[in-house]
Length: 127
Image (cartoon, rainbow, N blue to C red):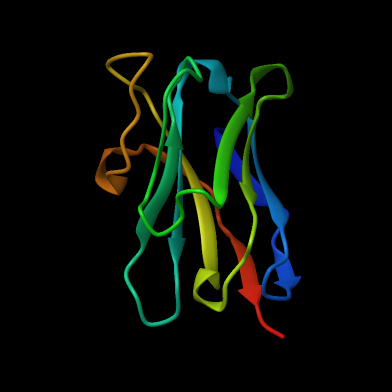
């Protein structure tokens, strides 16, 4: 059974940091590009970052550039999202997703193009 499991969320004060993990089971992440998405209360889900299958290319939403860093460790079958300088507006459920890319050096943040999704991990930023 193909499964993605997110972890690392929690309650953190503004200005703090978190590292989210997206672990795969039942399949190898090597063949997939990975995206991170989030859904805040009362808002639609939005893409925040993605990483290409090769790991060479990454992309970020404008709202998170400079604070979020995506990376992958294929040996651990895991993708990470490092979040620094957290703001209250980062509060959301964070999801990772996998898709089979056409090109190994390209990633996209169009959620409709992703095939597999995790259940999400809650990030709450509050003092």
